[in-house]
Length: 568
Ligand code: MSP
Image (tube, rainbow, N blue to C red; front, side, top):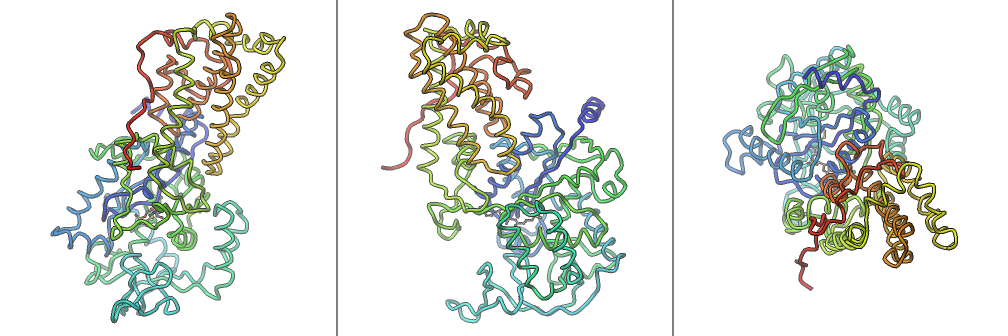
């Protein structure tokens, strides 16, 4: 513990990224994994750069939706139900190497205290009042819809739907506590205008801003339900007859998971957090220095369906409580399967665990990142996942396998051209301007790569990033193809082998956040020492100590071909 604390103090920059917390009412699917993956890559990239980073995720365990799911699954208590189902999310994270710093559950005692604290602050500051509420509620979306968004369901007698999510709504009239959301429209607009990156991507920012500007008034929000109706929730402070609205509860997780409101308000230098490790409920001490500053670096990654809660409700709750706002809300599209929305009734929900068990978790990670853009919906096709694996085997795997063949000597090439030796690479081909030029432009590509990673990861533009990576891999393969090292004298052969191995070494170090497990096998294959897998070693020629046994026969292949499992 003391060691950890000391290490954390050394870091100057700290940041925080969050996934939404997931409803544990069914097994996780590929869409849930996607939110976690976007965060994980970002978090791992910060760690690779030796910055301190916090990454929090978890499960949203209260509310009517969970209460009803628990009942219909035959559980007498919702807590027993969520205790079972939340494990599926922890398991998913384990399979996919999702490297969170805290997995928070809204049933965790420190979170419950924190929700009450947020409530009390909003109440004390005059933003909560009691009133009569009449309106249309969707259990599935855990939200009320205005009359203007409610229509009769044409296929079911007597049922009503909302036009936003098309889920069923029921009319309710009851006593609730209200939040004075109507007071926040102007402040939200000015915050969004003054912080152009608060909502990202820009298309979403414009859409939300336009909605806020054209709405005459935001309606006050019901933030509690009678305990007679909603049994499974946190009681409102000082009034057990009401339970806290599940979104008020859930959004608060973002504060609880980095130490809670008081530590943020006091900005105490250190707070203690918990770390649920692979479902074993092991509590680990985690030091968060300057939680207020960390909170202001927070990036919320969310799906497009929950933008309203994160860009309107959440900032308003925070402003009401006198708390600073997070840095950014990043909104992504949804995953379809073969062009169709995934749903239980259609039976087309993609199970990420099944995909990982056949293709490998890192192949699924790569595929999801390569085939998605924030602004668009992604389309999952197993055929393309299979092709992604095949390409990685035939292009990246093959580049390594070729150079590690028994005809070549990686160790000799590395010794010759590492450190300042790489400055001689072009000279070796001074009588061959074409190859010499190819080497020059390849080196330029490699030198630009870290900046490309930095930019694309910051902007969540993973498909563009991986396009760049493929460009370099293809370029290195072309160099080997055209350079024919097997026909060359020793220095020229070593120059080509060196540059190809450097390409793989540097790219693999940089791709660790994208493929955490496979990158280790690739680096193991070329004998890169563990302590040299960091950002300090991504310059060309910066590691003179790898490749020692790489050309020995019988070494393990990092990425093997697998049989095709789809029917033609
Ligand atoms: N519990 C709330 C979030 C509370 S955050 C304070 C919730 N949970 S959810 O389980 O329904 O959804 C979690 C996330 O998964 C959301 O960001 C949602 O957009 C995302 N996805 C659900 N289906 C998805 C796809 N098909 N594709 C991509 N993401 C999807 O909402």
